Length: 295
Figure 1 (spheres, rainbow, N blue to C red):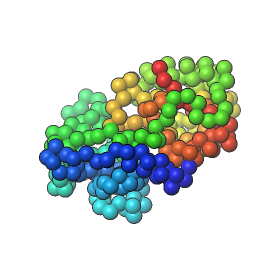
Figure 2: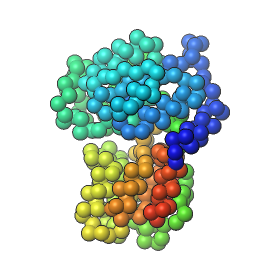
Figure 3: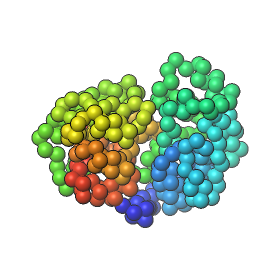
Figure 4: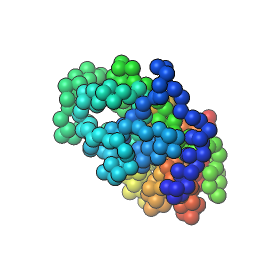
């Protein structure tokens, strides 16, 4: 799918849902906190189509530099500058925030210098998994009266739907791998370790951890000796749609093609498919099945 066709689909959906006034009677003031990938660009485009001009707060270590050309109002902050971020949102009158784009969990082990707020928060945390880290950040925002909204708010047309989305349905063996993979993936996701499992013949070849989906698929390819693979991606048991929503894009399909992964099974209505039409088109050309699953 081209960016223009993505934009058109989102625009059509957003025109049916006008912006709502805030509780104070004025218009809501949005900010997009941008990590890496295409997610922030799509949110920004969709918000603009809806007549919303959000402040973009781009994370220096993660967000793509090109974002500066797309946003009318942008501030670049380091991942460790949470105190400054909170001050900035308050100064600009922001009352709603969209979290868009990945922040790699391995940043925990980077040389980024945390400010006092970050350091105190990390020291007080029993666990430092994704839910705990982002949950603590969301709590800081909410304590200041800032509402963190569903990260798919402007992107509903990009959510995977139930059923086969490509031309080729999964065969009997692939269906068995999907069922097995979903059973294991849900347990792993429930522990907040990762959301993707790569399966071959009802055997778990790779489990996603901090490295991300595409790297997990590549690792599976190196272990499977050319066997056909099935990629299963799930949401968490109690998925908070405000953050860490499962996503897949065209790059994932290309990685799958190189890895001899023949099926991508995702949770319907809980997984964003970026560049959706292009993703489906390339999957069809590669003979890869994309299927949305429900319980």
